[in-house]
Image 1 (cartoon, each protein chain N blue to C red):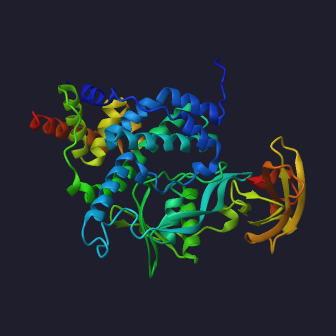
Image 2 (tube, chains in turn cyan, orange):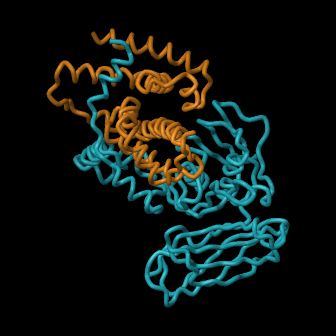
Image 3 (cartoon, one colour):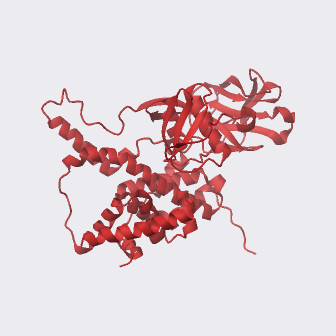
Length: 299
Length: 167
């Protein structure tokens, strides 16, 4: 047999289970589509071997003093990390920020892992598939990250990594990309917010959050006259609540905004929270509205 | 003139699933060996392609993205699994179901694939199982066409050698 025949022979008898329903449920519910950091460890084979390891540890006489076998999750903790994702704006694709829980050895590791998974908000995407990056460490001269797959030709994708890691580090450290043991010739810094970020980005609510009575909405925007307009819409598009709030500044970068949204009297169900602002440089021009949305549930 | 059909993300998902679910799971089995893990890997790839549909829009590009995601996630799955397997290796008992000459041959081929360097395994699977062109393989793996050529020839030679040893 030639190689083609050998490979076909090896797997053509395999009839995978039908998972379309599982996939549909996950795509219909972005919460479930989001990060599943333990999914690989949850494979049937792995569970069986992990169970075997546990059974062995229990059988051992000195299981009380034995720390037990190290496992894949060793040193993993859960962090709430800022994660930037790519989404559409009137000025082309830009970065939006989510806050998500992710697992890692530290906040940078968790944040880097998070952007290699699908975003919680289905309006965004990530250009970095799982396995794109290896280790990330902070040293005196900045953040060092190991690029395993892909390249650095997409500037927005590179900025996504820089913004995410700087956010996780809590300071604007330069980012060095390594490839196969070779460090890039110079570090990458963050480009100005007005050039790469969506000028409207919702921090709260997170996609899919549920509320009763009222909710606090927060975000960052660079808005004309610092004015952020928001709406709550029913699935049929009808606006059921609206209002506006003022960001703490405008012009050179994004500034924070916060408002309380009264949800009392709304029928339980799914709604869309929309925050909108006109580009400050474009005046009140309608064609340059920056928008971010979150699906919420009212109980 | 052909009419241009625009699919929603849900429609695209169903079409892609119907056409490619089985072959992508089988591709992943060639890479990770374990069918359960392969199904998880490919399921996640379908969820990812659905989320990305607004940017892909085109079934051909979506399929290319699916393939790439399956290969990348298969690689990650192997990395994650390697740690657990190292700890379990001493505990493993011989547990093979009744074997037949056919099932033996399949096992031997999958074992031999697992023994190859990762890149060679990936290139062989894409080339000889999915019948992809060198350009498409280069695209899926993010490597040059020259690298595809050399991984393919070295991989094919190594696979033949491994399979001969077993005879």
